Length: 207
Image (cartoon, rainbow, N blue to C red; front, side, top):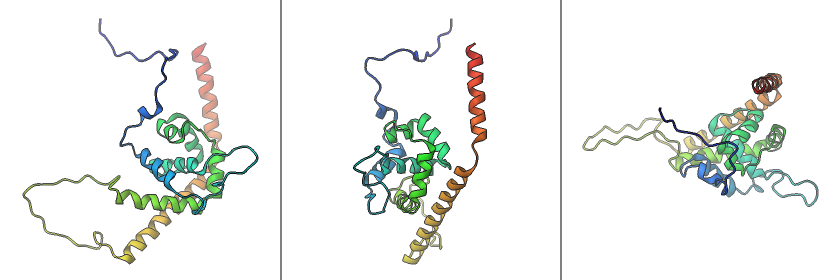
């Protein structure tokens, strides 16, 4: 009889629970998102709610919600509803937030109240990544070969060109935020209908 690799019993209780950090490799980009967001001074950007209120129900820290948006920006997740689902099922945003799962309304309100601050933070993040040689193209070195240098307009930068590139980055981020706004305004009837059908199918399969 052939042997197969067996999965774990879902009902098995472990004596020592798994460590969430073990599921994220040391070179995972979300670790950069974590360090970047935690290193920002959110009161000077400024982000609303960076200073907590003395009374009332505690709110999510702006850095936590910013991490979710940076994750979505890196992975092209263009709506608060999809970010909500990702934070519930994807191990990377679960790790980023420490298992916090804000709903889409909280995420949408955060973006609406902090649009300029999110745009400024994303612009800094986009500039930082190439500086640290992250998310760059592969480099191939060939020993003993000589190549003619090329100094075209795409490979040299002046102060004016850097400022123009930064303006392009900020404009691109602005378009991304506008896309998020449109996605959040669209009705979610299709997603709700799919959820209802899925629950009905699961109930039928159980019967």
